[in-house]
Length: 188
Image 1 (tube, one colour):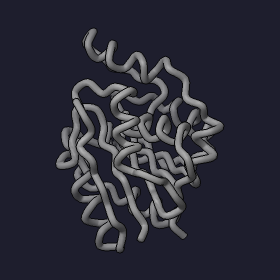
Image 2: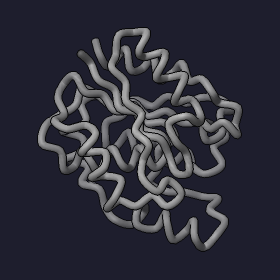
Image 3: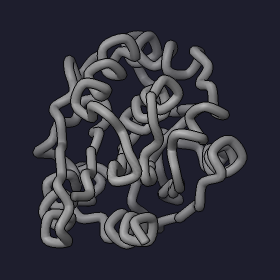
């Protein structure tokens, strides 16, 4: 059976944003879907999130697919650079290698390691299978320059959505059909 792991973003959880909708939509298509509650979601750390995801996924294979949102995308990439095996594909939503709009010292401190500790893109790309990266033209945190970085570093197909903000409940995004559509293309 094809497995999908949805990795939520910073200060989110499995019941927020478009994650519950996506889980139901993919289950209707015959996928086994997991949306783990990432640890200490208000203070995501590489050293806790990546091993936590690795434990959830177990042994990755061609029937494993990963969907990330925001820092969840970084988590997936950092998992993949260390993975023993390859996955069938990844869909990244609002992923970033640079950020804007961080307002507090705490936000800057939390984001700093994610922004500064390098990712081995060669290893991540090899383990990622096919990659799709979805962005919004009015994301307050993710500059559109990230599109080129996902394309260059990971060979990602880029999808640009209109007026979806950072793809959160606050942006009114409770469904995200593009993820289902792109994931189904990766499975074929």
